[in-house]
Image (cartoon, rainbow, N blue to C red; front, top):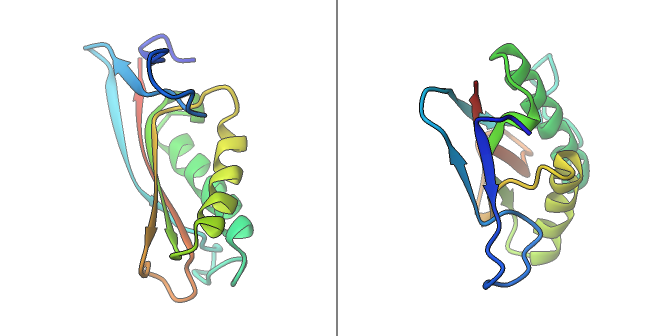
Length: 133
């Protein structure tokens, strides 16, 4: 984990599969990423109709954007995962892919079901903020 970022556990709260907070020390560079979308290089939507496939493509896009900004998944301090569905099971499918990608770096995250996302056939989007020393 980046030394500028400290994940905070809250043992008096429910045993959540993520940290309840992250602390970023002063003097670090913050990176605010646009929502990572499941787009192929040619701009078409990847994995049409597949929540897990789109979540995986979003993670791939997120990693590329982080790399371009001089950061990695371990530098991420917060995420928001948006899933175009009102079915909790669809949200969970997308969340499992994202959670697995982050591994032990289980940053504070929000998982939301939304009505629609911006690209045609888009089902998943991941927003993130990173902190780099």
